[in-house]
Image 1: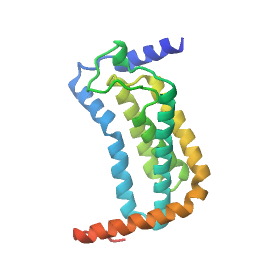
Image 2 (image 1 turned 90 degrees about the horizontal axis):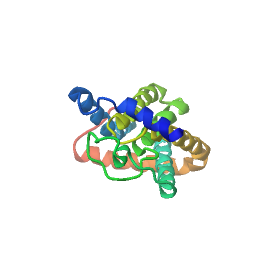
Image 3 (image 1 turned 45 degrees about the horizontal axis):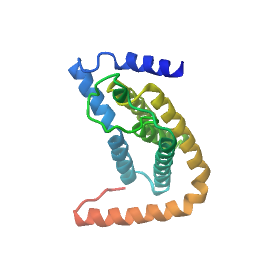
Image 4 (image 1 turned 180 degrees about the horizontal axis):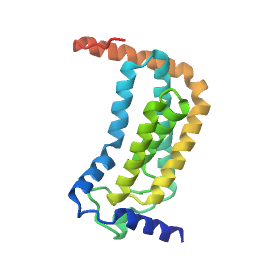
Length: 200
């Protein structure tokens, strides 16, 4: 029953894929570009926020890493084929025959968004990022790369990862403070080398 529902949801979301160039192109861009959006956002924030807030960016990165590790563990014990591997569709872009459950892209984005929202230091950025994560999840399914249940699993993994990171945050604080200092030193050297600078 669950698998039938998963397939029906997939067919409903994927309907029309490959026949609408504008929608197809947008879906591919969203499906592939989400992690880059997170990376750019975090880098920009790093240069413009106060030093004490940089710790939250490192913690959010930690939540992402925890989520991706969970995904690898799940994939090690449970393999689920992607839609195109079962003959349900032709994907909008090439992808390797890997397990689809959960989605690394969606886990990364939901972990980042949830952490920024729950930490309440960057909720103004976390909420738009959450919207982008939802669009990425839609795009991955529409493009024929994932099933809807893969995305639901990614949300669960992201929430668990954020919870773990919040529990570990205090223990990791000394390490993150040293890491933030090191990153600031390295970025300072790089900006001086290229004649760049950010006024604070």
